[in-house]
Amino acid sequence: MEHRVIDNLMRVKEKIEKAATQCGRNPDDIKLMAVSKMVGVEKIKEAISAGVTILGENYLQEAKRKIEEIGKSVQWHMIGHLQTNKVKQAIELFDLIQSVDRLSLAQEIHKRAKNLDKRVRILVQVNISEEDTKSGIESENAVSLISEIARLKNISIEGLMTIPPYLLDPQKVRPYFKSLRELSEEIERRGFENTSMKELSMGMSNDFEVAIEEGATIVRVGTAIFGERG
Ligand SMILES: *Cc1c(COP(=O)(O)O)cnc(C)c1O
Image (cartoon, rainbow, N blue to C red):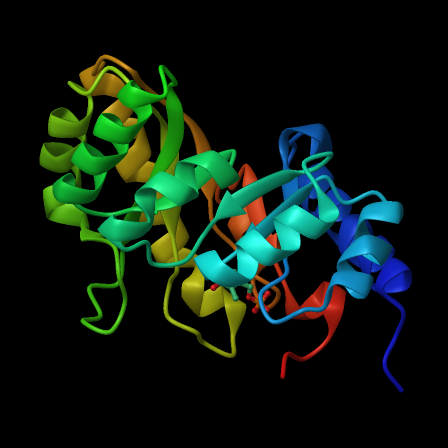
């Protein structure tokens, strides 16, 4: 039997609290994003009633439909691949774009943001495992990309995001989380303008506790809240 969203959510929150407390972190420093791709509006509303305040979506058209119906009483984050020709809509819809992985995309965001006299908040997505199937900038090019984006005044870089390889044993994912944290520390030391490394978006249903131990500030949880997709 499928559990109710509210029960799932409580379980996830308890695990977040426990993982944080055990490694000496304040649970309030970890934000829970409910990833709602392919999840219907009714279930999303259940999650919001149960206290979810951040929703993550992967596809622009799907997100647009849901945001128009559900509204902006919650934060909506873009976590999927973003095409340059969808930037105008994306910056109107989303509170944070977590999937910026190339300069051309950042330049388009800057241009559109400037037109709206707005400052757009982004995370830079890093391909920490160097798999060619994943989007994200390779680690060794991340500092250089961020140094370029940092010049774009209508963009505020607020941290890093990664999707590590899916591995059944979450402990095996730990080195990837650790690398992302170390990269963010290096970027922080560089002191780029318009840049703060306050957010580390990492950890999904299978491995968010390990991600918290390695410094995650945003965990992105879909299946453990809404059940299997599709
Ligand atoms: C789907 C997705 C998630 C959530 O994955 P689950 O394993 O269902 O928790 C998190 N982050 C991104 C970028 C995703 O696409």
